[in-house]
Image (cartoon, rainbow, N blue to C red; front, side, top):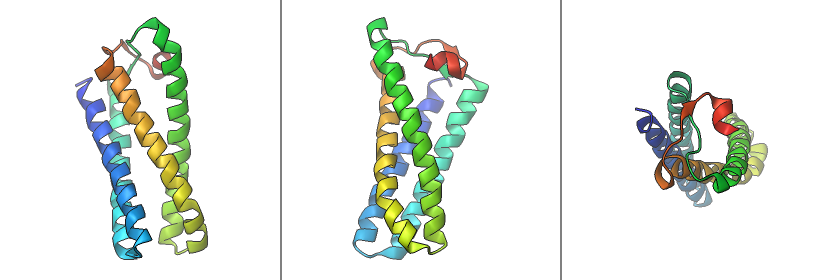
Length: 150
């Protein structure tokens, strides 16, 4: 279970990023209703990701880096970069969705491309964090969130 939930959450965030890319393509083709549906599913998949991530963190704990010590600093810097991107992406994502649904299109059109780029950076760095924690190197110990990061 300790490795299954991270795999599932990673799949959901990857699917969310694919939906964002498809939504971006659809809006460029002026298929606005399809764009709205795709972005809705991107948001739903992101929420499912967040729920599975939180469930694992709360009920099981966080996995510390199990790779070689000479890679630990690189991993921690990369992880902090990912956490920062993910936080910004979440705030921008919610803001962009709300402006779209409220038809505040000037703001939505301005935020959309920036939000999408940050979302892709967050999703791809999250996938890399998963690979570093569970695939490339053996998982480290399961501990609390702050010990796992530092």
